Length: 166
Image (cartoon, rainbow, N blue to C red; front, side):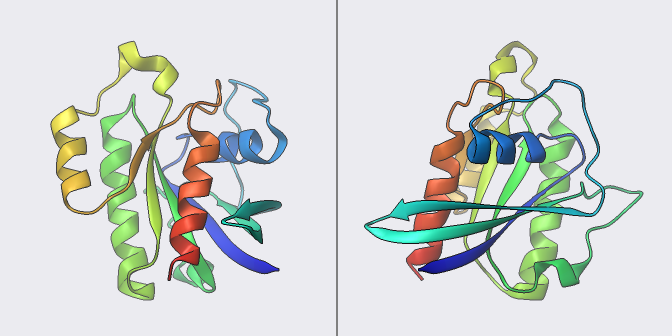
């Protein structure tokens, strides 16, 4: 069996924990924000192209001005979901800055950019032109909703396939 370390990276309150809970437990627990302190680790076994794969999901506290994610957290990481809140444009820029830190310390590794909270489409702040530019530069982008489950499984599966392809 193949085991892959996956980190959930992004600013605070973008839905990293909720995405993990939706993927692992197929549930959305609460709309009340609870801060992740440090790292929470979960596992989920999946099948990718006929192979059994265990994803070890590291749900890391949000990277923000008050507390930066330690570069040592990235060690052993096979890939990451870069999570931004589509209703808060600034979280995309913070996520991209965090991705640059990953690349500087680890080199280029598989990643999927997740624009979460697509169930709040009327509050969306990220412009389609910005998404197009990011896709053109090589980002795999998905709109997800931890609340409804939209595209959550697909995000993890796309990442798993990318990690196994290298």
